[in-house]
Length: 472
Image 1 (cartoon, rainbow, N blue to C red):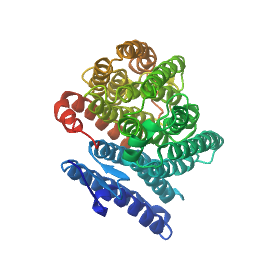
Image 2 (cartoon, one colour; image 1 turned 135 degrees about the horizontal axis):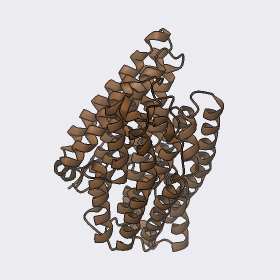
Image 3 (cartoon, rainbow, N blue to C red; image 1 turned 30 degrees about the horizontal axis):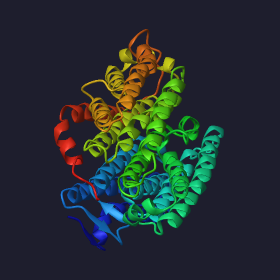
């Protein structure tokens, strides 16, 4: 049984992040350059407090806030914890390179605002709030992508912005169409109104809406920005862009499938299944011959979207959909951030050959890299292994066995390009003797790799926590 109230404490994690961003912006106006780390520390405190508040709210009953526009349920709570935890990791990765940078405060503020947009996406239960979350997650991210103001960064930000602006307009058009079809923007209202609306009108609105949300997830056909934005932006920003917005977008897609589209006669599940196959296959094929490690991870994240779309395709057809998606999101976030932490730890290494002999020079860092890359494949006992097992089981249980077969084939194929990075790291003479190392990034890589293993080994409590039913 759910209840509705207008208690601001229901959105305490979002309020903490917004307040920290505003206060940090004011502090940065008068703090000396070498003391702007205070705003970063404030951001870290707000993320930590938000995680604690999210854990407390997760133990309570499902509810909605502000006219049912925002849902507080396991999907929102898991999204909050993963988004805030991921933002905390990115803050740690960025702190060293940004120290005493004249725009250090701006970076922290933009990061928090983009994370806040992801939180809004995860809990939105109204199309207007979904649009607001999309814009809030996008605009600061454009600035982050071009933060260095060099040619590569400018190109990355421009491509990211053009695709985002185009698909944002398409998404707003879809919202307008669905408003006309369902005579409202609230998800429960749309659930009752869309089945009686003209099928063509609903189909046009749904396709346009999916295009915008898939842009934030980085999935086909809205994936074109990912490799260039990841390659041209700072490594810490690349880690953020391939992890945090994806969590909010996929949670939003799940909620769209579970509520307003639940009673629709449209074959939207088949469309999501096709997009799942396209994302995992195109991402893998494009990653096969990449030698730049950032572009390799960029195409890897496109392929991961394909696996994450599988439980969305079977929403309402199986009881495994929600826990499969949420557990996989948590495992993927840990593992992907760990891989990018290794990239941040060796900032001068750009290609897979630059990591040759890493195991001789930094055996612990090489071990973390191996755990994270094999984890992205889905090797036991990492968290992604169990996550993939859950999504494959959900697909089979939901009547999409063919989708699980395609996903297994893509998983096997992905091993090739991950091994192309691992092989030089563990063989041959060291070429990293003259490299500079980031101590904070090394520590993050160790922690993320260990957490991925721990989440995979002690998976039962996590699966139980994310398996509680979301808002109807």
